[in-house]
Amino acid sequence: MNLVYTLTNITLGDVVDILLVALVIFSLSFFLRGTQAMALVRGLVILFGIVVIVSNLFDLVAVRWLIERGLTVLIVAVPVIFQPELRRVLERLGRAGMLLNRQSPDSVRARIIDDVVQAAERLSERRHGALIVLQRASSLQEYIRTGIPLNADVSPQILLTIFWPKTELHDGAAIIDSLGKIASAASVLPLSAARNMQQPKLGTRHRAAIGLTEVSDAICVVVSEETGRISIANGGRLIGRLDINRLKQILSAFYGAERIQAATIPMRLRETLNDVLRRREREKSM
Image (cartoon, rainbow, N blue to C red; front, top):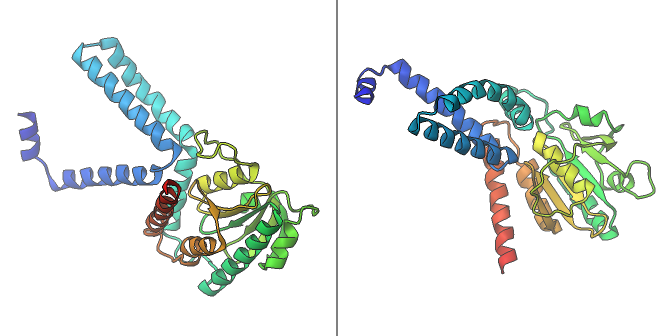
């Protein structure tokens, strides 16, 4: 009866209110999908649902009191637990209105892709470890400041020189900013805190690449010093064992085809990454 009464007395404002709440929940689930936070959210929802059902079935007054008080603590704890994910959500929302943000033109990005691919190929042949960061919309100034400022044009020769093992700049990341310049070298990046990585023996460069892409929309190209293998990190995930053609293909999809359409960028990147991961899984199963 209560449901019928509610449905018969619902107004247009109530419908708009419900749709807005549904939109907020869907948006949060979209940004958290595929991250470590999603598993934690799922666990909390399941645990909370079980406790509520049990307390109502057996009329557990003390448990209901604990749930009511626990909600207040949970509201305070959520921003702390999900700080990286909330930061990414707020940055993406902020980028939606920054349509006039200065970005390098398509021709410059295409040249950067070619230069990075050439440098990665030669670094891989020589087994010189490298970590190259391609900035997109998220600001990387806090990481640029940790390195040596360069403000140099991108070229394979400069990248090879930076990551030559006997130079002072090789141990760290080279960051290419949104204007297409090598803003800094030997920059320090945050290491990923994920514990359930598919490859537990990843080195510091790979963990730093994953860590940066967990808190920003940057793309990281990694060359392993031990094996010479080339990998790409994006969105907190690592695509490994790439040849030069696949490297250029992925960079073109993630970096070269970027457009000022903030609403569709995450979806396109996610779809492209999922396609690549599915191909990798099929290749492994053969």
